Every structure is written in structure tokens, then in C-alpha cells.
Image (cartoon, rainbow, N blue to C red; front, side, top):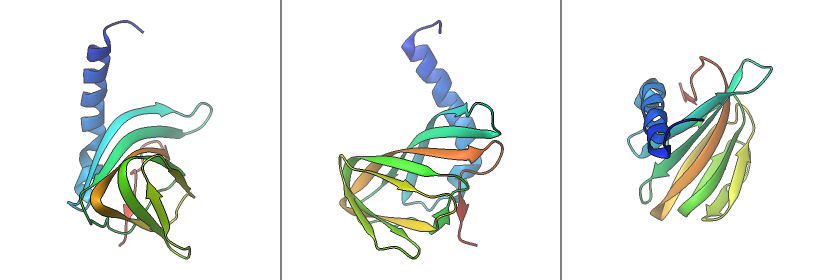
Length: 133
């Protein structure tokens, strides 16, 4: 790859902003999501999307699901993922999690908020997530 890291990062930020447009509009205000990079899954019609998700103190996302698997890592803070039909999963900085495709869930942040690095696998051209109808 040619060019400086800052040029690559700026190009990635522009791509993320373009990709994030309709996804951000669907999210509750409590959730800040930044899409960092996406790339094709070889030999399939899926792509991998890497981003960050941030919730302020004591916030709750809307109930949502993703068409493919989701995995994440807690960078800062504490939170709880509540997946329909399962016990709540409490997480703190340094821990990771995974969700099955289509798992309806919400995320609750702790008193200092929570910041996650998240990886989603989605079919190309489809929305990143589906909020509760």
C-alpha cells in the first residue's frame, strides 16, 4: 500500500462517514458509532465491518439485531449485553463477547459509560442492523 498512514486514515474516515450515513440515523442518540473499515469476505457476498460503539453513562441502546455475527472487545468502562432468552452478560474493559446472527439485544452502559471495538459480518448492501419494529 502506498501513501502515508494519515492519508490512509483520512480516506478510511471518509469511507466510514459515507457508509455510516443511514446506519447512524437508525441509532438512539445514546449510541455513538464510528465505522472504521470494511472489506469483503473472500468467496462470499458478505463483508466485514469494523467500528467503535460508545454509550454514555447509564445509557441503553434500542433493541436491535444484526444479520450476521457480531464480536466485540470492551476498550473502556463497563456494560451489560442483554440478549433475548439469555441471562445478561456483564462486561468490563479487557473482555470480549460474541453474538449469533439475528440475536435481538440491547446494551446498557455502566456509570462511566462504555466504549467497544466491534466487528460485524453482513451481506453486502444490507443494513448493519435492524432496530425493533
